[in-house]
Image 1 (spheres, helix red, strand yellow):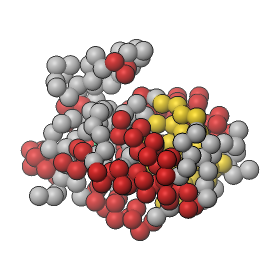
Image 2: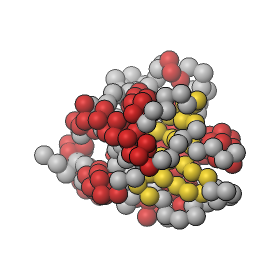
Image 3: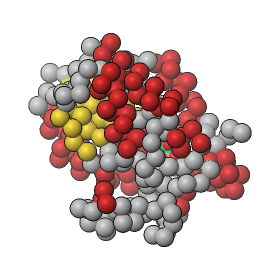
Length: 249
Ligand SMILES: O=C(O)[C@@H](CO)OP(=O)(O)O
């Protein structure tokens, strides 16, 4: 039996709108992001896909998106599980920095390396940086030694996979339709794991906000065909806009 996995990147956040590196900083959705989240739910409903269980990160923008989308899809009753392992990539010392200023400061090559290389993390964030998550109560029950202070995409995949394997996979193997509402880079990490694309290929893949991406998986949780967006045209435009971030102004 085909297993269905639906990935949704949260709607536009206040910091996406301001063109700031966000990572683990807990910003809210912008008004446009709220509309995108509603639209994600409408797309889901129109597609006839019926998620049985919801997973989100611990960050408000993903939780808000999931709540709004499930309301417009008329599926607020779902069971929900949340994990820091689905959080956005920790952006280290770049958190809170303007992407255009960073592009000017680092130059295009290092800027892209920090944003999209597979295994080069930005410099770590200091505990006393105003955008550090040091002491954030939402991570109180997690061993401080495993909480990141910066991450590459590879490190994101390393912390995401235990949750995928121990928790999410078993729902899919029980033929539950799974909805994950998370972040651009945590979803890129999962995409790389599921599709097996190379480190080079994943650096060119950007996930747009608020458009459901559907995987159909076999019994080994391998895709039986290419994943597809429920609104492909909007997804292509959204992905191009993400790729171009930093170049604006
Ligand atoms: O700032 C961030 O946390 C991410 C996602 O918004 O940005 P980028 O697309 O540059 O990895």
